[in-house]
Length: 67
Image (cartoon, rainbow, N blue to C red):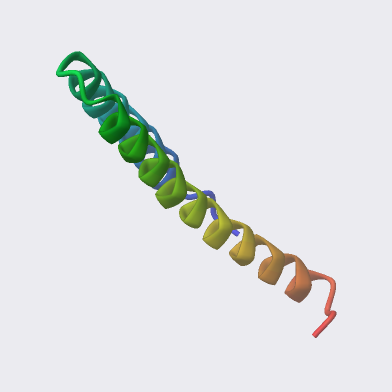
């Protein structure tokens, strides 16, 4: 199983972009939109993490031959 460093950078990039968008929207007085953007960013990252965990469990299953 190779470690995908790109996924870590993607998650960090999404976090930075969401933080900037949140700050801009909050300064414009649109706190509700800022919260929605943050929530959507969180959901996107969670889907990425769930996909990576699924791959990890598949790899563990093949290693221990629990097919």
